[in-house]
Image (cartoon, rainbow, N blue to C red; front, side, top):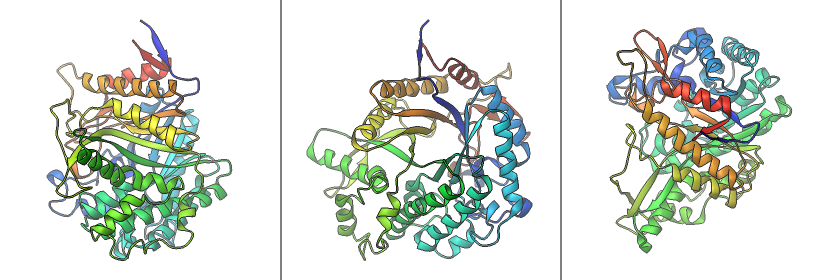
Length: 450
């Protein structure tokens, strides 16, 4: 057996988000979020599932931190629930919410685990949604206020901050396709929301740095590898357009390139921007492009696309290849190529894989253990892709497995399990899976064993 090591000091962690695990939506002054409202709307989630209880992490977090310790994690990425801090989105601060996260930060540090805090993982206070949500500029301004409140309370101890998680999901999945809260279906709203989510990131940065001296601040973008179904010019053009829609529309502004001109032209031509980029005010693009200390990368799969009915349009092509229970193709080569692309085309000081993982429904067997060998294989392949990228010079400095535990999987409810720990939602019993112990060993030796 040989061990292929990662660089010394490589950060190993696991990730979660507040609404997916916490529960306790009405305790200690927490306000209502768009996901509380959305999940309680009939037909919006599989089986009518809600995050009312989820993993009951609000009451069981000390037990869950024990799992992090047993895993040997260097770091833990978790999100703050905006409505726990500012129940109405801005204005009156709920001290009980700040105290909850302050206790968690202290407990992590006592265990030698570094907190990586995400400020927004999709739980917008409904008061802001009622005033226009992310399609309104005021939401970006409210986010900066919220970021300052949290950074002032935790910034003496938290030194790694992620502003927004996956602005593509915040905008396109939530305002264009309507699959996520608040469930709108409007291209013009979605494009305005995309700008305001990025603007919120830019406005929050100086607030964080002011209250957390020496902090590392970044944003997490989700990427899907865009691959043409054939080498035909039409399919290649479709892949370019999908890449622009999913990847470049968010990546380019953060790194000072503005919105991609080909996509602006396409959206205007389709009537999605009837007033052009009227939501962009003078100075906005400079605010969005303020230097970051790292980029968080969430990667799960690729999209193979063919030409649509009109030039620049695309349609997905489903190949007969291995897939996860989410229906996503397993494509670790896409992670390797993505990391090389980010390294070669953008000036990135550091990259973290802030999410990577897989859903399989394996549960406890007769021996009461969870033998999730397919998850181990998935993780091994993607970590090997990370190693290849590092060897090629990519400044990849950490990896966070998604997720620490099974949880509420948004519109899929409890019908998908991404966790390294199996959660029995009736009893809340936690059972570490085989992949948990495999990942523990990877962390302990800082490498993969051939």
